[in-house]
Image 1 (cartoon, one colour):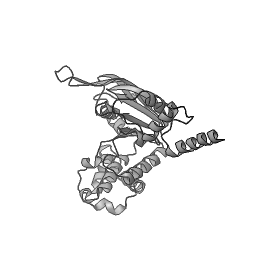
Image 2: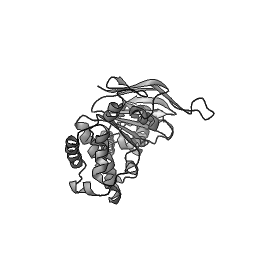
Image 3: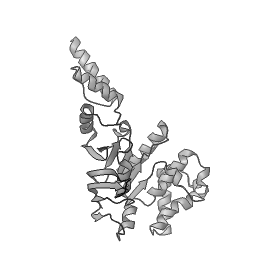
Image 4: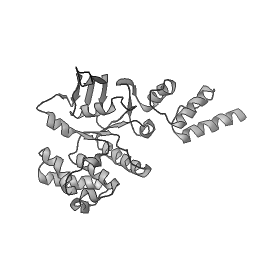
Length: 283
């Protein structure tokens, strides 16, 4: 079971003077429990790709296949596949609309035909995962703090227990503490088998979490691989609009100067390698 993205391209305003190619011949797979980071500059096609994974957009050419079923307009299985693939937009709290948190969290289960008793059990479990008290269910979501609204918005999608979770810039507007709390929640979902596809322009943020990196440039797949594989190539061949971690840039400059240090984004690992190099020179 997996998501397979096969040679997809997407053109906005096709056959008009405003025709714009957003994606060109992109392919990759998402397996259960994997964390995939899709990184690239603004306008690289990241958000278009995210919306294809959930069937909000359909490829101009190529195909997206979820657990063996192709996504296409009016597909009889489209609704069930959208339950499998949860999509979280940037600033998801802006999507809140119900008068109470309970109504907000019941909306998706009702839409997907989940029985009310099952939905309520799922809500209880989801609230616990997001460290939200059951008392929040009776509150108006617009009266909550910004951090709580973000949690409620995410919980409202996770309550239907999707197999894949696609998040478009999920840390936007969050401080360091909020980002760490979100990553902790996502790691918890991943350990339970949920695949994560995170869209971001900030490569440093995802290097310690993701299993694979898909780097887009001008709508094309620039590279695909593990973080270690990706940084080897990115250090030598920079990608438009992609800012590498300062520690990584420093490690690269040291290697170019002849020091035997790893190409790493981890400050502690780099310092230890530098100390070993200095010690070997002294002895």
